Length: 496
Image (cartoon, rainbow, N blue to C red; front, side, top):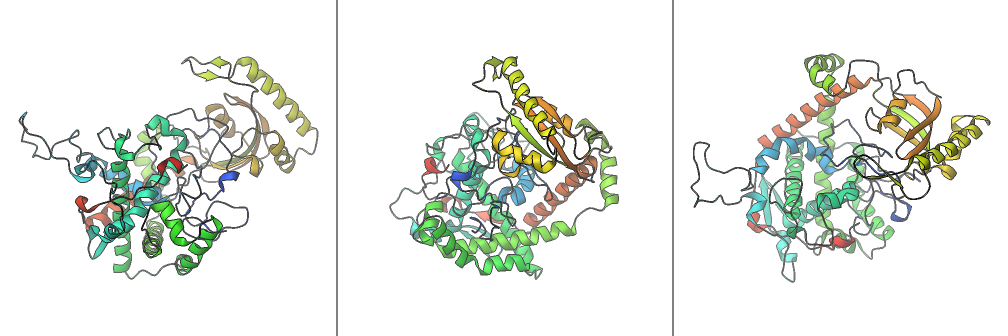
């Protein structure tokens, strides 16, 4: 089996691609999440050395649920995706500039000028057009048109389709549980829905288009930097590129398509060719390979990390990050005994919750199972053996209830407090009650790296990454002809 995005080979039983991070779990093997999240969605920004974890109680927890496999045969997802690895770092830097494109945000006149009541500001950028979906019968002739230029490189409509629909699919793949809160309806045209994330009149179509254009610009700037500096692809990346045609054919067969062309058109719309996708893969693999090489070279030293924490100690302590021995990450196994029946109680805000009686019954059941385990071998292996038949957490059943690399504050309070108790040591066990039920806990290990050091290193690395990407864009400015852009139409209602 090969990764749906980058075509890297997958080990048997391991659906997470070690190369690009895409979750390739087949649709029929993807368990529905059992435990709801309790916070609203927030925009995440990860440093290059951060990686997300799927947790039963992550707050907030963008979901890593693959969408319809036919619709996403070649699209990466989860949080480790194109936008996180490259675009998110610049997203915050450019957000203010992008919002200036909206007539609702600020004018294009000089600060000293004031518009008269009769004057209006013409929308610019993606807002210059209300809709981009092609209405003609044959979009193929339009796909060769150039829509953006950077140095000697060009972005055609054909390549744009891949970037645009990937932006859309990645978003669904990451936030599928939150779409209704965000006001994104997959059964309606994206150009007819206002995007709730920007605070402007921007539609979802404009949002994903802007995202796609920014993503191309960052990849292309990195690609141009790599070529200008004579960069040679790593052996792994070169192998992926050299075997991509063969792997595409294999993927098409694996996912039930008659041809590679049919698979590409299902994912990205009519007229998108294998040649275009190969060009995309070269751009993606080269830019990302080069990017991580640069990030490795800019990795801060221990002295720099400690100095950075000291310089920003007030900010860190306000976030609850003290310079103590709290580990950066822990690994823990758990068995969730979930209350039976529907939620019968309400919290102070009127939200449905399990009643005290339901939670008490779940605790009694957990205690009984816990005592049974204690009376046996009471090993980590025997604990993991109990998970499949007893835990209600579908997200961890397949690996013996194990969650690795859990950071402080990632889990709900009671779960978190037990895991990060200063006295906690490998092999500790116990019961923890949360709003989800009662958890039987087995503490596996803690990292040697402390949390304050991890947070400072990540923050400093993020700053360097953001600045580096912005510098790349500054060295490689680009122009876009929004009038030339057309977008293929794909059945969004079947996308997940």
